[in-house]
Length: 544
Image: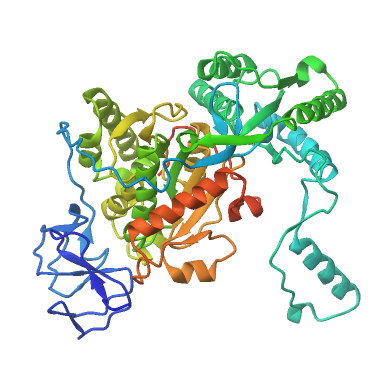
């Protein structure tokens, strides 16, 4: 690493520290008057109280107290303030990336009756209400091992050895054991074309508002109709707010010619719990024999729907991992694929840029309406978007939401915005769409898959063990240290951009190669191997 600090755009008045800096160092003609930790920022010029702090060419805060040239930018001397947004000023000139390496490429996917192509082939077991979670767990416990989907964790062996040591009177405090891999149970898959059975337990379906029940049904419909899903088993109590009829209407809204196997069991109508479970297990088994008939076939890259997300971000995320994903997103958009940029609380301060990229006034208005309503709900309960950065974000250099958002938005690349989707709406148009979800990582990945993402790219600077039950999630680290420290959950290291080994273009193309291999089932992301099946529906309350 030759340089120690960089400025992102010429109009910025802060530099980013690429390594730990010491007071007294002279860099770019600036004498540091404080230490500056790696990933943090330092002032280029003296700033008076109220002066705006600029980064990525945007306002990311204002000086709360006088700040001297060469001083560390912190939460003590800078407070959140974001760019205001208004009418659309079209900026639709887009210089498409060079797609010559990819324009004739295909992936091997599962072709569905509705014309979409899956990157995996799963069977779902879903409760309509939390009252059925226990019964879903019963089905899970009896099917996974018997059908070959169960995994023997190294922690089971670890626990067995601890028990043995305890029984033998050994010293438990000094006991050590290391093993890093989960292994299949060794029985072999009875249905090799089925990637797994996924059990989407949740805490909703009743007791909340009718809107909660409606949205839950819409989300579940998105999963059932998803191209990565072959069919589903539904357990209903019968009396809950989330009625099966609402679910069926939501399914028909997405796919009027829905033809996948869908088996519904109503406990109150059937009576005996044992009878219901026997029926559900038998019918699920029959459904799996149907799902096992699917085969992967070649499909154009236009059938990939990429969801992009970040979690556990750091001060390098916006200059390495996120723009690399953004370049990959632009490649896919140019190839006719679909891309969804989510996490609306993390678009705070970049709204005007996104408004200008919308292809119509109607889309721009839909985006601003959703964004302003979301922000108002947050402010009404004393939790505005400015409270989005986590302690981990702040510790590693993201000190305001506007700073965090300016870097987070880089995941969406530079292409025109062809659609704006509210939560649970389906991605239908090629190119980039904005999808309203919280910044909350699990709620976001849940929403991206529910709106049709068949591959998700998840950038992180601090590390995050998130995944999704039906959509493969690729983890991209913003820095090399993280990729080495948490190699078990990180798929790709974008920290090579920070060290100067690769360019954003090179990394973006590498990410697309990973995307194609993942979509074909040739590369299994770490989150899939580790069974990170996070599923948390958003109740549309205030979640940042």
